[in-house]
Length: 144
Figure 1 (tube, rainbow, N blue to C red):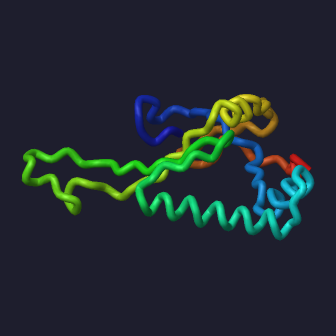
Figure 2 (tube, rainbow, N blue to C red; figure 1 turned 30 degrees about the vertical axis):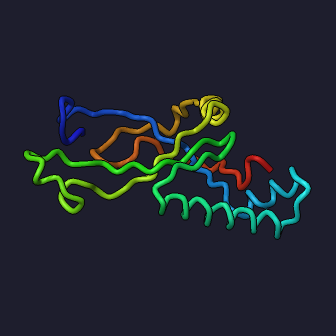
């Protein structure tokens, strides 16, 4: 039963990913080694260096363009204040957030994901539980 909202008290159904696969750093490194003429050590060093450079740029408040992947930018949300005198760093500014904006190629890849419903696993929500039971056909490395 839905515990709140316009459907309170009703049995509701919703979709949930069957599996949530994870492409590990090791899998990423191995794939790049196969795709490029770099050693595993070179790839790992490049990824660590990329992380260091992006973090340094974020510390300086800069955006970072990652070519065909997209870009990172820093966003500092602000609270609305009643007077100009109240607008201070401590009172008006919230915790900075990092936003990733994917380029078209990455958005196209996300849109190409095949979606389907496994009707045999659908069950009713009991107000916070899951709507489907996870399947057992997980693969370790879908890109390998």
